[in-house]
Length: 317
View 1 (tube, rainbow, N blue to C red):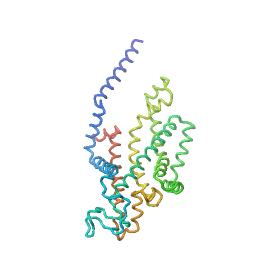
View 2: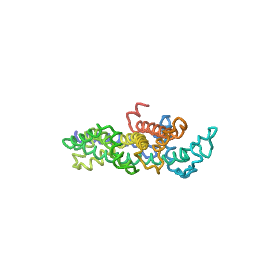
View 3: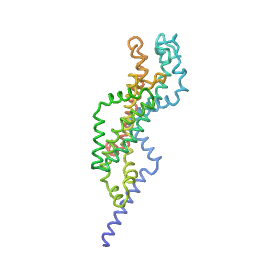
View 4: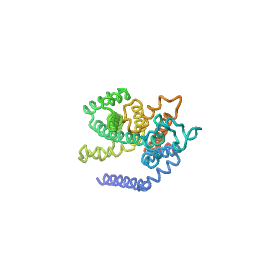
């Protein structure tokens, strides 16, 4: 009996020393932030991704201060003006004007607001719904898991873009409708990832200890399992936000996103498709804005995946 108590006390001391050593490595939030900064500096693609993402965020937040024209002001005398570096261009309109004489640069700045709003709130809704549904399915198991995953697999088997277009055509053009459409239809992806992680984590030692201590399942899910899902879900959210920006532009190109009175990159692409040969800049600049925004977010997602996954961190050392 004394030997068993000594062994248990030794295991306890070992765990405490391990916890202390872990706290020595990453004791405060400032230490973790400094480590992430050092890791980012070694990853050049991550630096580029962060810069591109911050440029888009700053452009969206300070669009009224940066733009020199109202994005809805029309001036038919200056319509289809080429960019400033062209022979017939003017620095009053650095990116030229569209077919109605509206300043392209101002419209791109304000269009970033629509794209980031749809991407952020769409991912927020999808992540919240998917995380709750996936956690319940993975932890409950049995028939509950089978029913939930059957519904999720059915939704995922549908052609996503056609499914979104069908719903958008029924609900009508509205920023709120677009956010809800992407948030609900994208939640199965988060649910599947969450379920897989929960199935793995529920067999871990600390979850089994919580169960043996009498903890109820809501506390186990929200206190012990979900905090360990933050890393994978943040990485997934970054990639899905990039995809939502693409899909929103696609809906705008089809005339199913926000109303024409709201400047968006998709609406600008739709307006410029008629002038691709004679006046290509009308569609080229919003297309480049979409490309660089998605590129930056994908690079940022790759960096976050490396930072939040210890296995990848060890592989890079």
